[in-house]
Amino acid sequence: MPANVNSRMIELAHVGRSFRRADGATVNAIDDVSFVIPEGQFVCFVGASGCGKSTLLQMLAGLLEPSQGDVVVGDKAVTGPGPDRGVVFQKDSVFPWMRVIDNVEYGLKCRGAPAAERREIARTYLRHVGLPRVERAWPRELSGGMLKRVAIATVFANGGRVLMLDEPFGALDYVTRRQLQDVLLNLWNADGVGTRRTVIFVTHDVDEALSLADRVMVFRAGVKVDDIPVAVARPRTTDSLLLPEMVEIKRTLLRHLGLDHQVGVDEAAP
Image (cartoon, rainbow, N blue to C red; front, side):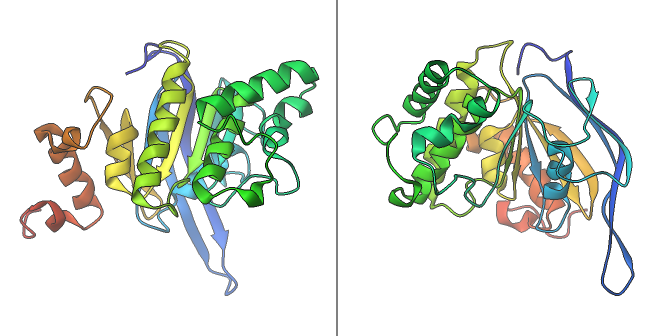
């Protein structure tokens, strides 16, 4: 767990988000959600498609306004996007008209960083994600996994203290997904204890959440139904997921998702 567990980075207080359908009916995508996330914590949002987890992330990113309640990041109310928050989406967020190095340093350029400084930072993060030799490549020349590495390098290079990732590896094969999970955790750990960024990672994959998170929040029909700490030490291997405490957390998560039979839980259990 991160050292700064008493330093609040994110707070939601009674947040809701409603949408009006074409037929005039109101749909509550998020309903009275509250939580606090300390600085430096890695939190996964888990839930089935349509449960509201991506809507919640977009409100934290400032891309959607809450219908009610307060969203606070770093002691400031969220009123729109900002450089303190970086986002990686499931679909590629790499600009196809820019070379790789220009993508990675783009946020720094927008903030007025000197050319030499931003180039050095961009190259550092490209090395961290294992792409030191493709800085002059065009995005169309890269595989899907490489594009995700570029997106991760970009969001870290920009320096925001909060990183939000919305099912970023969902379209990738199993091996590539595991590799990129390691890349993400290695970058997060490289910040050092006490200075790690706060990460919110949206996923529908229970094993992915257990591999990554300090804490897993479960959502169903726009409501937060559970909030589970994951205290197993990192690095977490495939064997780590078989530890009794991890199997028990997985049982709980799958029960929330209606899939408890997948880990041998009696289907008649409450």
